[in-house]
Image (cartoon, rainbow, N blue to C red; front, side, top):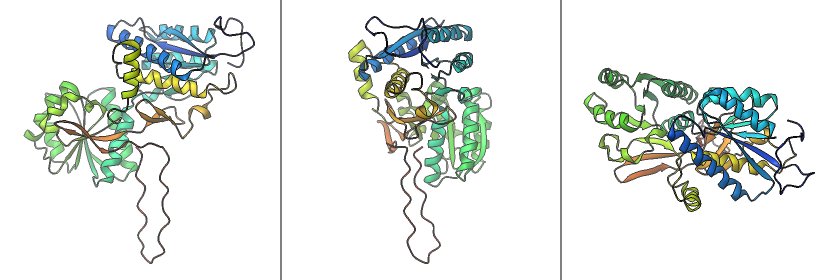
Amino acid sequence: MLSEEPGFLRLPNQPSGTNPVRVGLLLPYSNGSSQTRYLATAMMKAAQLALFDAGNPNITLISADEGSTPDSAANGARSLLAQGAEVIVGPLFAASVSAVAPIAHDRAVPVIAFSTDVKKAGNGVYLLSFQPENEVRRTVSYAVETGHKHFAALVSPGAYGDHIAEALKADTAAMGADVVAVERLDPLTQADALHRIAASNADVLIVAAGGNALRGLAPALAENGIDRSKIKLMGTGLWDDPSIQKEAALEGGWFAAPSPEADSSFVAKYKAAYGSEPPQLASLAYDAVSLVALLSHGTPYHRFTDSALTDPNGFAGVEGILRFDPDGTSERGLAILAVEPDGFRVVDPAPRTFEKPATPPPEKTTSSLTPRSPQSGG
């Protein structure tokens, strides 16, 4: 999209001769799942809240329905583009992203989507989501920094488990560690899988499960040979659930997640505006529209360029710092939390900047020791 066209949406209070910043919002308002419809409505409210906080009357939010199918998402994207959207915020689901991406790309309109499937990123699609790859990278980095080298993983069947396993192999290789075992979560073969991990020489076990699956697995760890004095338990963002704090078998385990209470200001603001607390993913829509507002002062139809969206400095989101990488995925500044009976304790704070600490020059001595590498920000 290169210029103003007849038929673009213009609100009555926007004078002719100006170029309003038209932002498309594509969410599954009519999805077959009531839970998904509720989330879509909450995300729309969060987007409106971000627009209000931005205080820029020149921004117009245009909404369309992602629906329940890729075809309905594609039709929603066409509607937004026909009304002049310079950027599309959404859709939520991976299949919808695949349908929307080529349509938006043909008009040179970027898509800030909420799918966690990193394979959908790139070529004009930027994923602003809680991606498990971020959690694995942060967890592995901290484990290696604290002396652990041999990783095992217990992951669920399906795409989520595949993402965890692939990220674990890539990150350990990059950090000088190794993967000694990867097993799938299956109640029928659980005991054998845990025995194999116990015999694998692992000093870290990443359990990529949450909820009932994690609570059911926890007591079986020691029963099947997992020696907590030799193997450090670690998890993913699925562990960010208060119900697991009472699981004695998980006490002391680490996982990567946003800092506790990082979103307290947003939650209070949303509750004051709408009378209820937001679901977790609502913050993504707030962040996306806040980022769009931040970039909205650029040249019309050239505001949301790849270089602007992938600014390596990133920006401060609801739950900490974040930025888009050139491949369209996103990075987040995550904390390392420990499971304790009275709550989650921060053992390594989330970084406040993506800048790496400067490496001090080596001292002028005859020693052959090299300076320690700066700590990764996750």
